[in-house]
Image (spheres, rainbow, N blue to C red):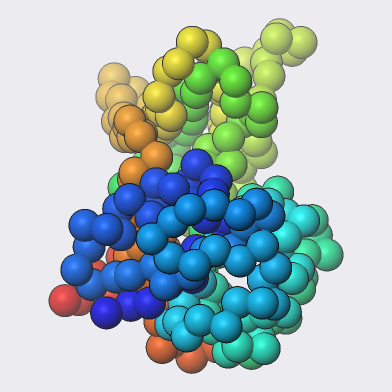
Length: 255
C-alpha cells in the first residue's frame, strides 16, 4: 500500500486523484494540503509544515508559488515528490534539481502514460524517418480557454524528436509572414483553440508519397491522475535523483 500526501488536494486534479485512489487497492491518500480547508476522507492541512501524517510519497498538483515550501517539506520529511505543477521559474527548476540530490523527484511535462509511451515511439520513428528526409510537423488542439500555445506537451514531443535527431531542427510556429519553401530543418508546431475540443496532439512524418501520423486524444483529466498515481507507486522508496515518466513506463514493461 502506497501512502500518499496530496499537495493541492482541493484543486481539479487533486479531486480527480482522490476519486481515483478510492478505487485503487494499492494506494491511499493519508493527508491533503491546500490553502483552504475542506471536508475529505483524509485530514487536510492549510499549512504544509503542520502536516504530521506518515506517508511514502507526495503528489503535487498545486501552483508554482507553493513549490518552494513543498521542496523544503520533502527534504525535512525525507519524502519523494511526484512534481506535476507547471510554470516553474528557472530558479525553481534549479532548486528542484538541487533538491533531487536529497530526495527522489519525478517531474514530467505530461503525466499521461499514453503521451509518454508516444515520446518513446517518436524517438524510434525519428531515427528512421529523419535521416530519410521526411518532414516533421506537430498540430495540437485544445479548448478555447487554454492560455498557453503551443502546449507544454507539444513542446515536449518536439524536444523528444529534436533530441533524437541530434538537435538539428528549428521550431517554426508561424509561416504567415514568410513566403518561401519549407526548410528541411524546420519542425512546425501549430496550435488550435476552439470550443471544448479535448486535448489532441498529432505528429506527422511526411515523405514522398507517404504520411505517418501518430495521434493522442485526452478525453478527461483521469489519464493524468492515473499517470500520477502510477508514478507515486513507482517513486515510493526510490533513492534520491531526478526521474521522469519514462522510468515509470520502463518499470511497468519489466513487470
